[in-house]
Length: 247
Image 1 (tube, one colour):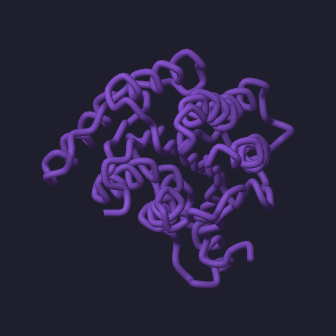
Image 2 (image 1 turned 90 degrees about the vertical axis):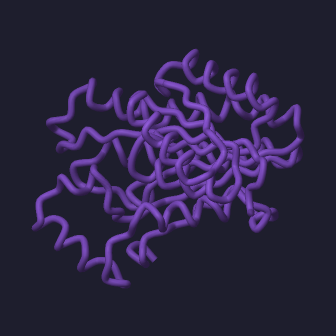
């Protein structure tokens, strides 16, 4: 098992990419801490993990836009497991609209959930990891943060900020054996993308060289690599998982 007995926190674990990452880590022996705002969905995931014969996860209802909530998440994990080995900053939202129609609330909501949430998580967990002199932080960015997208100025800015945060944190923490990397998913089939019109999905497919949409499992595999000893000499990198979309 690649993550046997390691303590891993995943935010936004109630659905989509975060849920798949949590399941994948649990299968590899991690002691999971599941964080999101939806307690019912978290408890359902925890039950699924236990039913599979895996170690029972810890469930912590968390609002990543609030620093104290994120600090309480880290404190709860530390109280239960006495260490934190891995943090996946995955929680995020979209509020898509053209820039000229975008409200300040649209901008702030996305920046708070996506970028500020990653900042709060990185700050709180890194204090523990620095004392331990080891740790892995994985931030879920997006190819949109690399190339931009019409109607997603707020989302693109938040994900570009996550990439810059990742590189800066990696430089600060490398001497303490804390590796900080980002994953930039391409077009991944989730509840969020399922709501897009078929015409949009068809147009996107034409831009993907491998001619298929990505899955949450594709991203979970990349996260497992970055969380495990297989990536022991990798930090400050952005792993683009997009089927060649922005090569």
